[in-house]
Amino acid sequence: MDVDEIRSDLTEVLITEDEIHAKLAELARRVETDYAGNPPLLVGVLKGAVMVMADFARELKMHVEMDWMAVSSYGASTESSGVVRILKDLDTEIAGRDVLIVEDIIDSGLTLTWLRANLESRGAASVKILALLRKPEAAKVEVDVEYVGFEIPPAFVVGYGLDYAEKYRNLRAIGVLAPHVYQ
Ligand code: IMP
Image (cartoon, rainbow, N blue to C red):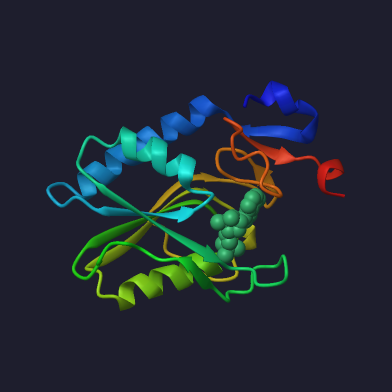
């Protein structure tokens, strides 16, 4: 889906499809260097990271394995609480592996802080994080994120895997959702 199809649902296009792909290529070159001779296991967090994983993994000029987790971080409320439930666990044994978590966005950072600790406790040799977007103002906890695509303002964004009520995930670009859509 292109921005033109839902232009009035957005107040602003924050990042275009071309900008996303250029950034993922840049991150891929860094990952290739950092993991040279030591292919990582990419762990995507469902569902938001599907697009980032698909494009980032194809951009990499090295072998990688991919696995997926689904976690729920919000419980009953819409505010991130840091209480995380595993809805779908990895199929891969990660003891001794170099794991690179692939995420769409870091908001409070609570989900990723929990996830990194969880994967480390399974004996992974290393656990690093790649996130396409980060909202710095919203950070409640300091998360060390080795690879960040874009720093964005603390607005609610949709597209490229990010949803509002399961919609807009298939939008090619990333935009700020207009208040009239959710008010
Ligand atoms: P947190 O970092 O623990 O607060 O949770 C991050 C998760 O919240 C992401 O993986 C998204 O699923 C969701 N999220 C946070 N901000 C946004 C947004 O602006 N649009 C859509 N989803 C978001």
